[in-house]
Image (cartoon, rainbow, N blue to C red; front, side, top):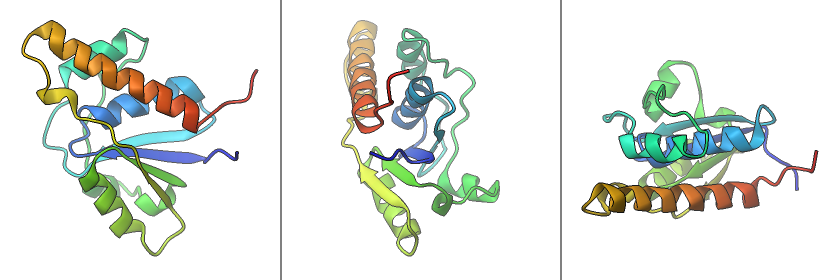
Length: 149
């Protein structure tokens, strides 16, 4: 399987799932693949539970700044410049498909739940986020297998 040279993870706000996926992917592939993330909107800060559960596996998200598709374009980064866009929410998939419909950009949809509304206690919330983190790790390793060193 040929690996893409660039991957964009996207979700609704770029504050929970897509930054987690970006950070986990960067740890997995190093500099072999250019990886970024974005959201439909960027109206939220990075989620504290995302930071906490990624920190547990050595992924630092504390410096992440949420950005939208529009902000990406304003900075000169075009969605059509990616080989693969991985949408983690239906809205992000819709916009990615609409934006790239006339270009050779692959768009995949990974059905990853938003953990932000799950759980009442801190431990319940952390467990929900850990489950999403672990699901992302499994998906990333399966979709982007690296050759043994």
